[in-house]
Length: 358
Image 1 (tube, rainbow, N blue to C red):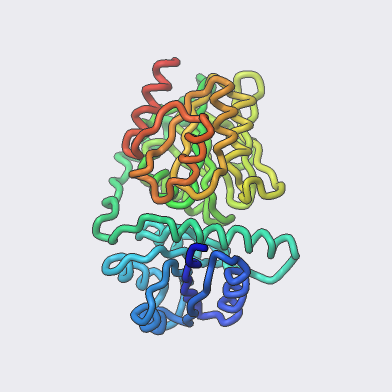
Image 2 (image 1 turned 30 degrees about the horizontal axis):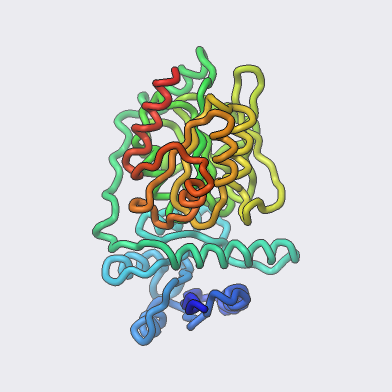
């Protein structure tokens, strides 16, 4: 039997430390090696025994989580899962943490309905397992700060003009999980302003997707927003599924739009890539391009096969550029992928496929 994943929990709340200890301890593949109320105490514990994964609170006394994360990733990287509350401020700080090298983000566990607690257990344990498999790099070697948009006119006016005279004929559907925030940043920033409409599922808690979309909207040539129910999919815009809600593609005549809805976990996730991909297979079919990126598990693999069977062209991120080569590997193994490419080539190939079909 493989050794359990050793986890260090850093949080100033004794209640949260206890809740996380109980949740993670319920999984036989995980061992909580220690807890700490702040980063300074955690440093002593790390010096004595190096954990496989750290769960890290955002706001703490003596040293905040962001400062500790930057120091850790600059000198001795360890996979970190940020543990944040559902607040706008917490979401914005956590987006910076992901930019600095954190692998994933989870909600702080709260006591409540049995279903919520069970779903939290599944998602938190899966997040830690995914982090344990992640390739982490020193902060200095991470991708450089993205260039800003050229002008507000180029970014903001173009989508409104496109919407007035044409409808979306091709759809790009993207699924990602662990490591996906940075992969999506690289991909979306490489798309031209007139790229086909993009619909995205990134495994992420509610509240965080809005901050994530806002961050991307500030650095990409296309516009990026958190999807709202009924949003039209148009060229030059990417819609990101809201955290904790499924997103489906629908079609009315020549108009594509998204439906955002509640529902059970699918492939242990909500939103689920499989849910999005299945809807794309049904309503877009041959007019779709599918992309599956870094992430743990198999969410999206079956949906991607359905898309391929419906005539879509499907691309997968290669192992070398993935933080976790789980989801792409499963989709490839199932036979749902047409081509495997490095992250830096996915955008160019998307546009090539799009123009060859136009």
